[in-house]
Image 1 (cartoon, rainbow, N blue to C red):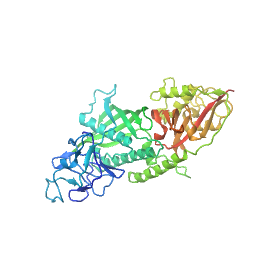
Image 2: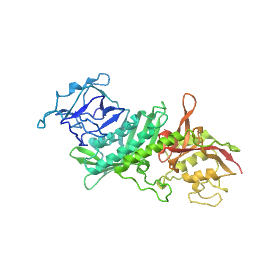
Image 3: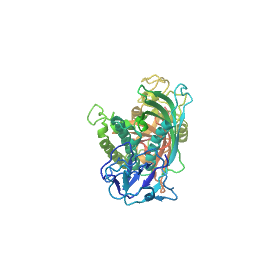
Image 4: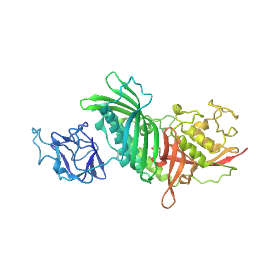
Length: 493
């Protein structure tokens, strides 16, 4: 299908001035009071649109796969020229009339996508498995394009059109919509413009498995480059994001049954694993029915977190004898943000590799391992070892909460750092912990400090493992509770 169209400031009426709510026909967005049709198609009945009082999702097109030919960006054409002549209500027995009409008619212009993507196959893809056909690849690409276009505009696109019409598939589509609503909302709350001026992505398919009912289970790894408007000239890279698509042939062609994406956003939005205040048990995940309320709660928390960064933390001036090589630590982090160093173990399968990765970067910056009392930060071998000896692994090396405890409790020999420093006082090589409700779940290392025209720090570019990110804005994370850990240097025995 060609680039979508947008039709602004128009009143749209259904054929019989009644709601039409067949989700397989299409979807709309409402942005700043304007109606944006994300898919507009021509059918044998003419051009079909819908609305009145627009809900978030509604329908407007009868034939979703027909091409669109309405002018160009440089030379828009009046929508009137592509509509069948129609005035008043169409009689209910007149099946030749358009399903809907627009009045007053306005100008239709193209909405250009900000990027592009492709599907490839891994080198070890099993030759006994059938590759996706062009329609199946297009379905997956359309899904990913909707996702990145949502991030580009910071306006979520409801792509229920791409999902099968059964109740469960549409519930899965709504789940996806709530996730992207949360992420777009979080990014809109930041003090810099985190919309995208461009993006590219590659989906590398690793397996395609046919189920007994004919559905296909597709596993793929995503690599992407995003250009945030706030930071022109910077390519923010993401590696090894795992996707699982389940698709099936329907009467409308191939459609999605479900989609799952690696990472913690789904658990964050659903509240799974979130500790309840005053309780020793994590909260139960919310249902699809309650997800919109959970998103509103999450965005209010995010608003508070973003505002708090300007005043959070306390300054400190600890003494230390040995310098920390910040640039060496950042260079290491950038080198291994998308790879793993074979000289070290990886804990991706055991809750994530983020703290193991940042510990390696600190070590590359000259911070020595510490096996002395009162706190330890060491990796001499993979076996956990709590003895004060140069052997085994201390929990602080690979655990986020344990590393924070080491920073807070260490004295004498080893790393000199300060937890919960003023958020915008960070430098290259410092650490940021991220989480929710004081539950620190992730850690990243600063590789660049972003300043405004007055020289004030407004954001950081960071590198991380699990998720594997390079030159990524800390403010673009869905974990909005963030704590700066200043790394100053270290003391000898």
